[in-house]
Image 1 (cartoon, rainbow, N blue to C red):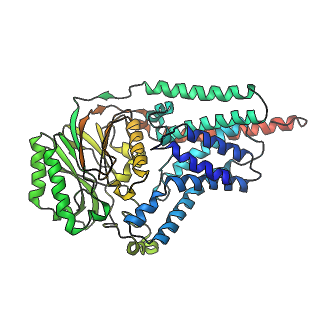
Image 2: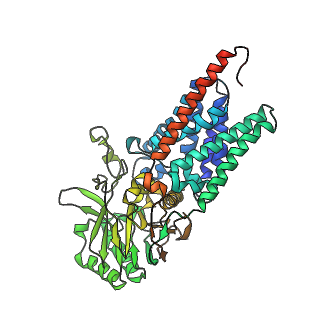
Image 3: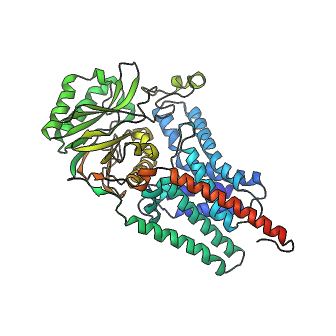
Length: 505
């Protein structure tokens, strides 16, 4: 149990900012070995739970910073809430441990079919159950640097998770052969599996899934660095507005992007003269400015929105996938009291329309995602292949000086890989960045600085396989693996019955 806990915690270094992409493959392989030696289903479930507790405890402990330091939740209650959150997330690897358990040790069937398929199935379920929390899916650790990143445009982040889990299964088989004294012979097949997958991933990285569309567009991404504790104070509103106006007037990009809720007041309360000045600057550059601002609609609902101003007609994108307890309160009769504990402004937004067209600005068609929305790749592709660029505006000030902004940047890199599009990130405190269609960070701003990130972004046309088919091929593949595992199990059982004097290793 203690070893599994340590393995889970160590796995987090495989993700940004450390990005030791090989590490999660090793730790998952070790977990597979532990499961194969568990004395019972219950023991396997506990082992998976311990791994999950170490993994999520180390990987998403920044939740405490969000709800205590910036959300105002009392320290003790915030500690309990964060711990309970990690406990719930740990149930997913616990479920994998329970479902994969059985006699026979670490067979090829178990290591290459059952364990990888169940691991990824639970990741996928975690990505949508109770609105979903797909943060730290295994595939994110392989973004860009790993040869396995080549699978991202084909089968998405969960597909990369599956290929990674297959590599972990092969590593576990090799280690098991070594531990059982089978020598090099038992390690050849696992080595072939890993080599084939790595070569295939590298080859896929060379494929050009999309084509450039027109000339690059100049961009200015603004990072206001407004402290979260100051952001919504009325006496600081003018300073914030003046700061973003000055940055906008100094910008040279045809597309200027401000962060999520950059202007800390409702759109209806903003002076028309202020909006007109933003629009005039964009028109002078022959382009548009995208402004993050909360919106109070005629229906009476509040929306977390992005407004376009400038040469193109005014357009609005309204955030669809909201953060539970941060932007809306689920099951209000049960959890409504939390509003009085958390001091989060505008914590009851309404959802925008599920399908919204890309914003046509600065000669590009922009697929918008506000903050947490870019964690859901299967939702972002709703705006593709029509969109030529991806834009994410965020206020990662909620995370403070933790690993979360780096993890979020890595998630954005995976979205760029899946879509075959540039991703532009404009964030309040960082990490503001320009990411190309291969997921590579071309330019980024320093965290916690007031700055403009100036650069160019190339629009693209066409569709990767993932854009065309989403997660359906991956889910079909998981079904095939689980079916193959079941069939292989029945075949082996039948053979054992026919040869009672021999036991399957």
